[in-house]
Length: 248
Ligand SMILES: O=C[C@H](O)COP(=O)(O)O
Image 1 (cartoon, rainbow, N blue to C red):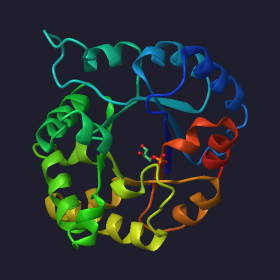
Image 2 (cartoon, rainbow, N blue to C red; image 1 turned 90 degrees about the horizontal axis):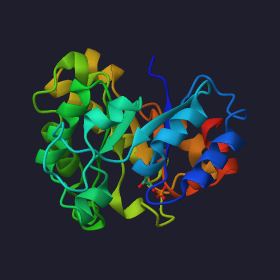
Image 3 (tube, protein in one colour; image 1 turned 135 degrees about the vertical axis):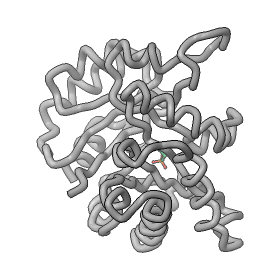
Image 4 (cartoon, rainbow, N blue to C red; image 1 turned 180 degrees about the vertical axis):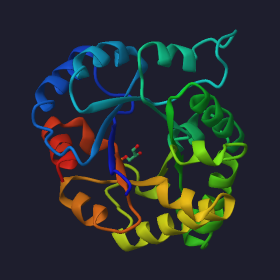
């Protein structure tokens, strides 16, 4: 039985003060213990958020990480640094990082392996652009992204990785893939995992949907068999919406 995981990805939003206020506002309202609640926050606020979420059901994720433990990589943050503050998850290969910061399938794989080595669980993002969808390449694109991301990942470790399927054209646009379409692609991703590893692994891996998820559509999305959660951008910035999403 896969435990659903609802993660709010704040992207480049909120100050430390706003972030702590957010947690204080939502922490006693999250009553759905059947769901894992996660906040993916900017680096600057992770330490304070760790304190604020102590004793709550909320887990923390970083939004990126370098694949080296230390070195001359100005502006980067390493897995050791995230581990030191007790971060549970790290988002890897979000389409915005692929699009604006030269993230490639190769760096996604390096980061995935490194995160696992340090016991920080990766949320690996995959998804097609509008052009790829319109030219019927969705499945080919996500297949390559998944195969590359999981290179050299053992089957035991693969079970712990979370995959987020986010069609790029649905991010921040108000356009959502229909829950059936999202479930279809996510079912296909499960097939890809099965072909790399085994049925057993594919049945354990959790796969989220992301792209304009909000309180009004979360339930329909979560009702789909293969969808195990959501990676939510815009709607997760509002405390009341975040509570509704997690308590869906
Ligand atoms: O990481 C979250 C996704 O990019 C979705 O963002 P959105 O919910 O604002 O469309």
